[in-house]
Length: 201
Image (spheres, rainbow, N blue to C red):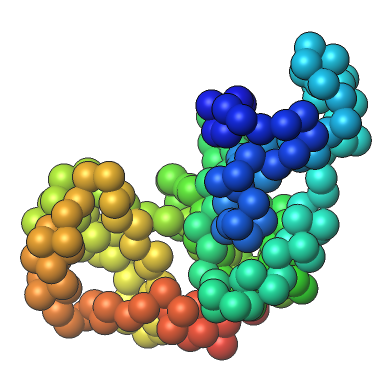
């Protein structure tokens, strides 16, 4: 922890965390923030961190505190890395989704997912499972063709495409765009969730 700010005084936030909005840090960094706010010191801090779960801040409080930051940067779409249980991804809870709906301008949440398509409404906002495929543009398009093979075209089919920024370059993404002609329509994420919100029960 001290690597963040070696000159930090006990009980003070690291210099490089003070200027960043709470929600923009993500929940992992929020846990670090809560650790630094803890009045416990040294080895006692580690014991209290693990022994008193009540010291962990609720998601509602985190979202409420970050409302201004979310609104200021117009954070309309959230990618949520969810947990796994019994080998499968767990859907975000109603409580978490409602927190985003109540305290942020979020229009929709894409969460980690695999297997069957995930398109649900929790807490009043759409949640979709991010879908991706290995390889680059050509392989992605081929896998997407397979994904929609049974679609009858009678109603819109929403696929929240997920491209790993750690493995794709801007040139790779530029190559994919022209491949996605009819019946595909590429739209921005905020428009995607606007449209999905109209048709999702």
